[in-house]
Image 1 (cartoon, rainbow, N blue to C red):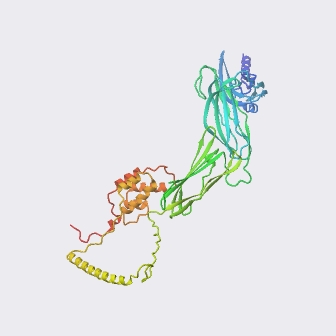
Image 2 (image 1 turned 90 degrees about the horizontal axis):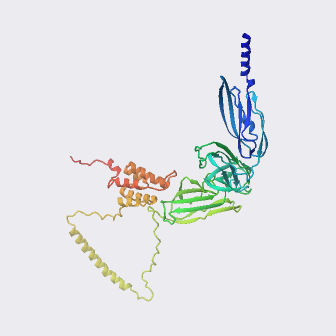
Image 3 (image 1 turned 90 degrees about the vertical axis):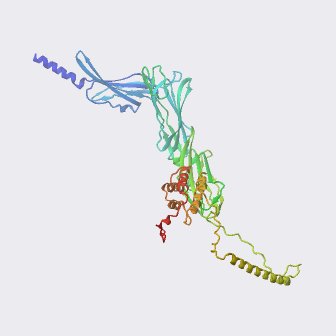
Length: 559
């Protein structure tokens, strides 16, 4: 009896050893078509916690994904365990292939021979295929290359993912939105998905663009779905794969004699505007110089801001450049908008210098230069400046005792006339003095007549000027109003008005107006004067001088 137990125990140990483990590999179809997915399933009864290495398959096939699972069985009181891995493969070229042995622990599967057939039109629609093309093959450095990807899918798509084209040494940006439509290829109907990209080579030489790859699942059920909708379908699904051929570009370097920034483009527009365009331009009052640059076939990230020469005799305050890229279905356009506030220091003639922009015309394959010509404007004197009085011509003096030709000598007659006129004037002055002395007896002397005051600027005038939403006009009116309101204090800036008024909210609004006209930080393009109008309306009717609080007390104070 003891011997029988020993034999049974030995057999149990023998069955439990790894030597009895079984590892096998199978494919779900053979032969397969180019671009058609097939599944390789690896099963093993090996108990060791190990996983197979599928990297040996990457030399011949595309590996899409791998799933794994385990099975436990109990038959007639005997338990068994097995594991399996299923990986989805795609062959991109026709031919005879051999799936090598795959190891799981100490065990390996047997090799499998598989045949891949070329896809033939007329055998029915293909599950999916990708077209990938470029609008040119020999672009210049940083020249735009338009890439187009078209994905054709037949059947009901459960899910899918279309990758992006990849190129080392280039910038690739998708432009426009993905479009969906129906198309016919080789007499078969397909669902067409189309995307476009703008590629900009960053180095000269050979550039290889890896094509986008598509992986998805088709449903065998009856329910239909839109593109890439992860909906639930009745029935089973099967995986599909599609890939296009790579594209090779030959990138040209700029011409050897080119100087300055290299900007290849199909068209360039350069526009300059003065605000106000026709004036008036006044000394001390700001006006704006706005320059807009539009470049077809470029991204704004590849364009440096402009640095134009400013006129002599002005103070210039520049804003940060407003740079954007406009996209369409087939093109990109860089837009660079810049603005400067200019303040002339003196009246007279002022010349805004010309501006030149060099670029390379990719349509004509030749250098081009876009020019804004110089412009001369007339600057008028400001309110605080006085023009020199006009020169007058002195009347020609005549020598006493001479008379014009043809007239009688009136020297004797004139002497007698002046004698009687002098006597009459002397008598009149004496009579006037006597009458004035009689009329002012007992009266206090009257003060001299005051100079006729200038027309005052009312609060309503200031608010009406602010309501015109012209920052330059508003500043000038506020300065004139402040000088009248706080005379004899000197008012040369809006800060002086804020300091004398002592209103915190007014000070903030006046600072914002100065920042709008002269600041360099980001600020709103439209000015809202309503808060400033409200501050002006809250001020007292007459503002006493802040220095009045420091005057001496009255000599005889009242009780």
